[in-house]
Image 1 (cartoon, rainbow, N blue to C red):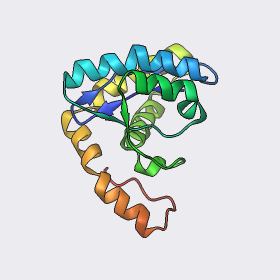
Image 2 (image 1 turned 135 degrees about the vertical axis):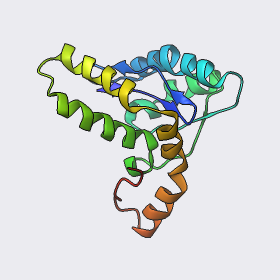
Image 3 (image 1 turned 120 degrees about the vertical axis):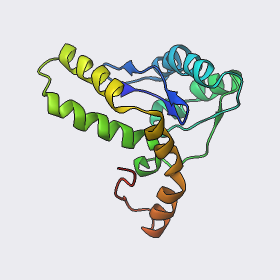
Length: 152
């Protein structure tokens, strides 16, 4: 699994995850990937972190860490990948990786890095973020059921 973050201003550091992510693993990712990315991309601008409510995201120790580090979070329904802009990015990246047909972990990571560098543009990130109102309307219209990816 890969953990990553993005905004309309840029993509963040991603992290290759082996196995199940526990609360303390997640805190380490937030400390070493999220906060430096936010500083690099956004400087002193305020920002809101969107999480998908996985069990490690909801852990009390993680919630406390987020509060202690003044990371503001968006109220977000669980199991809602259609609403998460990064899921569309992962879909596109996954498609590009599948064309390379990596046969081992090293090739997979190389394909991931290549795909990110090839695909991710400022225009794409803006499209992903600006697609949110349309996505929300589509999910409401579908009574919460899955929707098609709307940006590509």
